[in-house]
Picture 1 (cartoon, protein in one colour):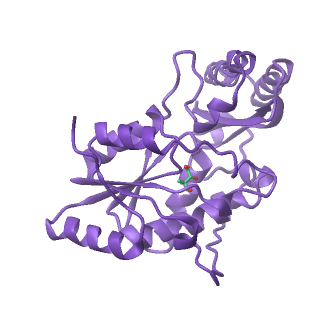
Picture 2 (tube, helix red, strand yellow):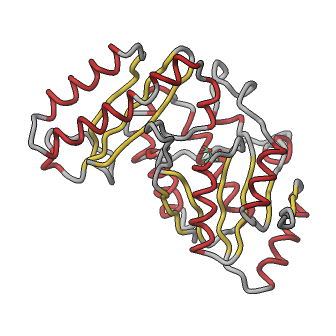
Length: 283
Ligand code: PAF
């Protein structure tokens, strides 16, 4: 059994641990997570190892990216299992701050970005979300000063937002997107999949199947409006409460009228019961 990674919970101990890593001329990759780790997170760790000599994983369920009515309190917290997975994956350091370390009394700052963070999609349904993400990720970058940071493409808009922020603020970190890891039936891996009942879990892959079918039709030259309307209907008929099913420019996330308007990404968000799932696919 490999040795468990060092776990640090205070800023002085993080600083010391990072200095030790850096003293050995390491390049550092950061994998920011909220824990409840699954194979999608482990794919980030494996990619991280290809880009840097040391891998730091942060585990912090960030309250500022949840609205009061959302699942901050019930978000899965699986510390022991997470640490076992990170040990197995031979991660070097785990940064696991508490809320009062990240947001001490008097904390009064927020990083707000424009561009992809205001493109609609998630921003339309979770207006508080990206401000919370950019603030915490900005802090994680400042604390760990990684050379690279890895984010899953499942949160595609988040990936674009963080990439934009890192470039705009000259944070000196290269943001790398890692492809979605899926269950055998196509459902994108997510920490929130544990909320699904057996019936909901059986219906959940509809999102991926619908996107795949839409992407195939678009590649065959079908009309964009018709394809998207058919997809939205299929998702609704399967019992989902659809937030959006949209075709966007894959880089800027700008709305598009035709597949000629750019590399296209299809993005979906829908609730099944009380669980909100998101997914996306390239065309
Ligand atoms: O994708 C997530 O798990 C979170 O949004 C992140 C990037 C760790 C920030 O809290």
